[in-house]
Length: 240
Image (spheres, rainbow, N blue to C red):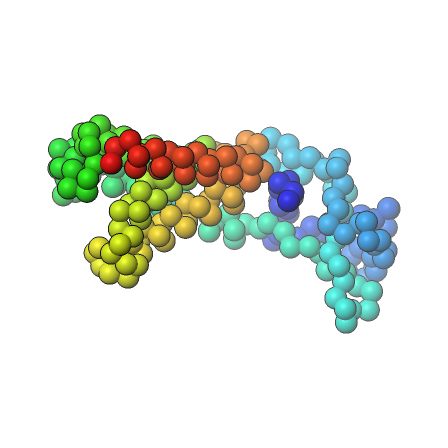
């Protein structure tokens, strides 16, 4: 599985010109027929500069023609601004929600339990060292939520949220999926969003835009998924 991120930065999501050995394609000209080795290929000379835009105009992005087509080819699916906006909304909602939850746990804001109240609740769930675990959970939610909101070190923020939700789902598993307020449907929805952000990256409306993990999120996403799973297991084994 390739981890290269070849998402297009062209407005609208599709390149305006495709070069195939010097022949260009436009509305009135037919593109040269690509060979099998050309499908899915891009010109290795194409690089992104610091602004995130391609420094080369000769990118080759091809897709296989339809079986019923008469020689015409369609441009391969490309990244576009709508996806960046959708990822921004997802980050703001998930991250902002966790920032609020963390402030409820840490400082008792907005009717929250505070550290003492949350520690007592953890005690009823069979956890030891409730005060320490309350601080760890609250800080994890605060840091993870903040990183998601601003789009900085997004895989770490998503992993923090995912790890907390994994523990909550484990505790509520016996209550069933749809069983408010004991069910875990809300936690499962949030965890799914955090899981997706591990592999989509934050989008271009973020501080991670010029970073390696912002352009190719899959390797670090996989690593942080393993980290989140390991920390969740450690929390359940050590503190419960």
